[in-house]
Image 1: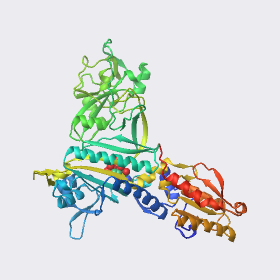
Image 2: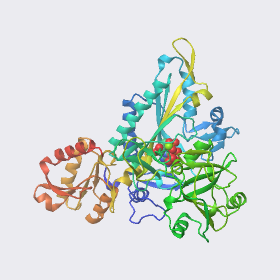
Image 3: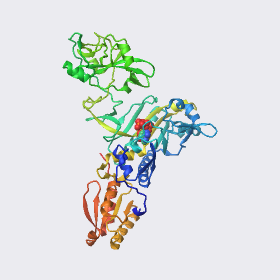
Length: 573
Ligand code: ATP
Ligand code: MG
């Protein structure tokens, strides 16, 4: 591709509304343009990267035995009525009517459509197992679209769906996808972790998220420093403390004027925050109001609490309600004489003689003990995992990382097949409901995550497998005919060998060409200039290391092809 004839509108300034590096660099390198909130054009350079990710995904899906098809983006409401999701799915589902007033939506995910295809086309267990996938634009009317392709409203996803006769066959299908996903992200050259994920209320039984490690990630994950346990913090199990402390103190009310937060109270009473217990008054979507006890320095994990309470969401009760129930402002809530059902974190079970609120303004209790001063309805794992917590599987400790969810594999069970009556006949001629799995990869988000992991102050540093071009040839003096011809010769030779080359033949200062080359992140740059040519050489510069070396002209193409081949197969650890 000749740069002079390409559409590559690079920007010098960082656009103001782009918060994360990948968003800034995608805009600056002319990969994408915003057309509305969360909706982007993929300009030629951006599309090349998208196609690279898609090609890797497609190859690995095919290798794992999945079959590609394409479903419509516009989906009739009937199907969503059948699964019950027309009512359930929130406002992320963009619903609209056609000219005949029939309801439709833009597909945010395609369980309904695929289940309709399978129930209409499969009859016998002999046609199983089957796994069908597509690579297609999805639409989710995200409440806060941001970070460019990372959280768009329209975005490209690979979604696959497996159908099996038995649970154990479905487990195998899941494992195949899990392995395929590992290969995909390895081949993209990314550092990632596969983590256990919460299955929410979708009714599934098991799920893993594939997280690219990056400080800007929206998700927090934990992984064990010793074994291979890794989980989303939403899900991370915590080991209960090994022993209980003895109860020795008696309950005593102390005045704590204006000290509401745990920090204020522990500083005022001169006790460590680990010796305090905080009482959160929370309410649920089902109308329940309960108290939750946590060690003072811990955070509540609302997802774990939702599982214990069998509800969809929980939130802190409003101040007025807290005052009405406890008789005091929120900073002074405590479990003693509290007219609420009390749930406590496992860690609190092992504690004794701790500080709690006294349900009276400016007052706390010291020497509080459960069992004696108040009773707990249920002890459960309710807190957020933190760095240094014990691994639930071995003697190791957990580390916390930030990650970007690029892929998600999910055992769905029979939720959709049952609701939509997708069955086949087994060997005895009996009708059997199919067992499903679903498997998504965000294509644009993967490209964005690659930039989050691979950039410097000058721009993107593409891993070779995702690079829009593998190599850029910069003509230092395009007005010098010999130089231009020498560059052209190398360009043609490489093109013939199937190398993806950007040929920077623009009549610009070398400095500004180099800046653009660094910004768009092409892994290898060959500078063609009068000085090197005198020595029958080109100059090669590596984008990542910045190292330069001279390449003798006669073996340049051969050497470059070898370097590119090697780099295509390198995987990040
Ligand atoms: P998130 O928790 O980030 O909102 P999700 O769990 O809703 O994502 P899935 O339904 O599991 O997403 O979708 C599969 C994949 O599609 C995700 O792993 C992610 O890579 C991608 N994806 C989901 N939502 C978006 C979005 N708004 N923009 C870009 N990619 C997305
Ligand atoms: Mg997900």
